[in-house]
Length: 250
Image (cartoon, rainbow, N blue to C red; front, side, top):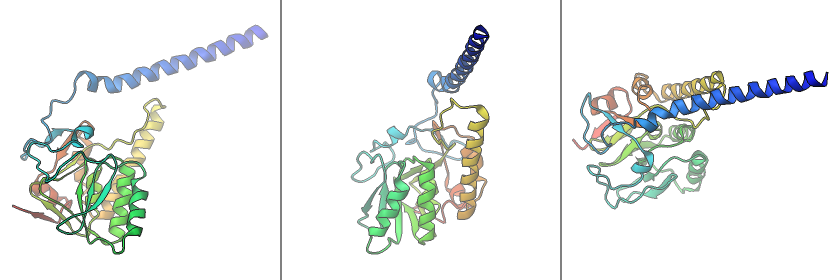
């Protein structure tokens, strides 16, 4: 009896080790193509044209301006989380990556303002999708406008904040880009749980776009662009998909 129980435990242990090995192989397989064959797409700073809009995306690289072709007066390394500062020409400039918890930080920051800013001006490589959606809903709830200066970029999760403005003004020399959302899930999970979680998050993004009045055709570009690349929207797409209500500058 003891031998049978011991053999059973060994069998269970062996099965668990086998499952772990399979999951580790799946994990490595999912990242191996990126390790061996990094994207050959041009840099974000390169000009884009219709049909030539996919660019290399590295959020750490994007945080280190100035970048060739994207001049920002007084540019320096962007913060690792959102930073809010007065814009000399008026409004508030929102700079930096979107870190976890920035949604709550933005809400707290708004509460401390003597008056709500009329317009938020974005310059961000993106970051936490959940926090971007949280910030966006608050922007729309408070009836604020959004905008981008010449030379600014709004990539990855940042466009979700931009889309929330009651009006959305984007300079012709700014860059807005989308790609597949990354939620930071560990792939060492049963496949059905990982897929279910991803589907839930994508459904939340689609629901958000509908709330903001954005053309859902935008998702075809986002879903077909991997996380290490970014699809830069050209002028006609910005207005056709309602990401921007106005293009300024040219």
